[in-house]
Image (tube, rainbow, N blue to C red; front, top):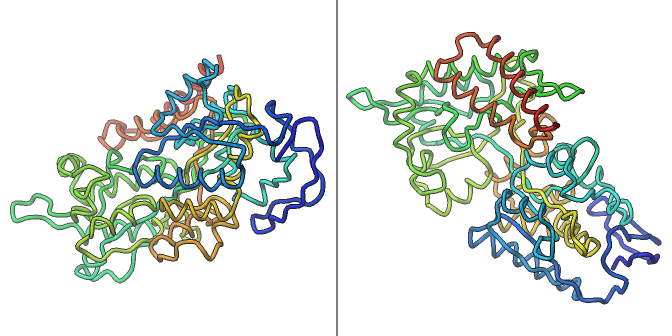
Length: 446
């Protein structure tokens, strides 16, 4: 156990996780314990609320406490980022020690504000070589301007779910790999009733559907949001216009925005057994790895498969890529038990067996190199699709910003106007979008 102001000899073989360390190290970084046997209780705030997920995190805590009998962890679940941030700003004995968030877009705020402690000193003094433990994309969305205030705690990757029965009926032999194939297949898979109303659409391109947020779909183009000085450059990136033109073409080819919106309004809730893909109202669907388990649990009445989302025709060599995000974990800046908190964060995020165990339990993508390659990882081919997407070098995550996810919200609002036909000049609209993003960032700095 790390001990402040004293050197401790460690002999730990963690080669499987690609990290460290053999010999003596001084892991003292925080402010908590002079006595390594001193009991301490950590407050851990997280966002999980589903009973199965809560059980999985509680089982993880039990495994940690068995390894560290003097450290107890008191979890509080279903905590929103807003509630957590209020507590961190207020500080005091009621504030958490260990924090987690589902919103990677907020990492820039956590790091720049100092509300989450810098983890680099902890990693340095306990021998964790982060570049050897975590894929680069995961490290990118857990740091801001060189400050590593969070670490990945499982990940989500997004791909294509497709109805194999509908594909067979339409004479389609494999999932589309390029955007031209995507549009062609979407049209073939669209079916209507005798009165002309939709029975099924090949793919619902409208951005308000479930996980269809524009940033997820846009990832297939590998866009550049900001330059080296943090200025928005979407208007200068030709991929931006191509992305919106492709989405508008998908809408037009399947009957137009108004008709598709009317059909979308009749879909069931995303996380219910009446969701659009489950009820076969869409034949292809953008979603995350968790949908696999839901389709099994809800006993889907059709055969289905998974694949990467298609890519632009002129980027066919990037096929296999996708959008990445995930849960992040860190240490509260106000914690009086930062060394103990680091032991817990390190266990959750670095320990290979723990990461694999947790990933299998809640059906999320592991977030370390070693866990992604572990033979203990769920071997379900449908799930493996998302493991491959997570490891694809072309896959991307949203870049951090000092105002959290505000620029993503601005992008969404602009995208809603584009698909509704309210942006007749895309070039002009993208320039205005950049200006708005820059204005929002400047306001946050001031």
